[in-house]
Amino acid sequence: MKSNKKGNYARLKQKAFLQMLLIIATAAVSVFVLRDILRGQIGDRIVQFLAHTFYLDNSIAQAIYQSVFRNNLEMILLLLTLVFLVILSLFSISWFTKYFDEISSGMDRLVEDSEDRISLSPEMDFMENRLNTIKDNLIRQKKARSGSGATQK
Image 1 (cartoon, rainbow, N blue to C red):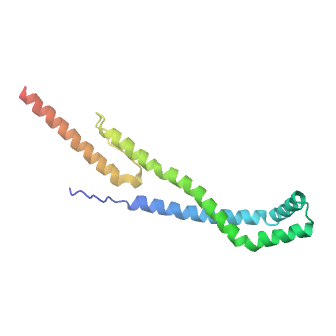
Image 2 (image 1 turned 30 degrees about the vertical axis):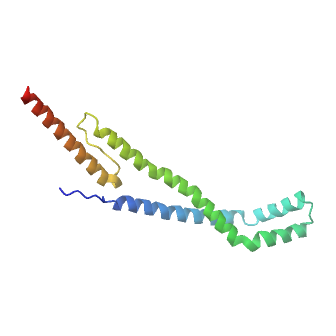
């Protein structure tokens, strides 16, 4: 059997890509839903905050709100979307590291004295096959050594 050094990562890449698209869509939808839910309410609260905290007339507080917040709404939404992307990406990284844990536990099972097959998640089947091939080779070598050691005695 020819060894493919590159590996077949198609399923893993597809799952990671779909998760990335889901993160982007979730971040965008979350920001716009939040914007729609808070539309009007948040503006009134900001104007009240400005008026009460800085002892401003209501019309001045509304003018400040207009010039600072409403005129820059696109930039604020972009920044909020980026914050959501960062937060969701942290969850994605946590999800992805589980594959390293799977590979690590598979490598631990390589050295066990068991003939049980190593099993990983479906998208890691290429690594599962490689680890099981290595395990089979190790078992064969061990049997060959124990067989040749018995004949020498």
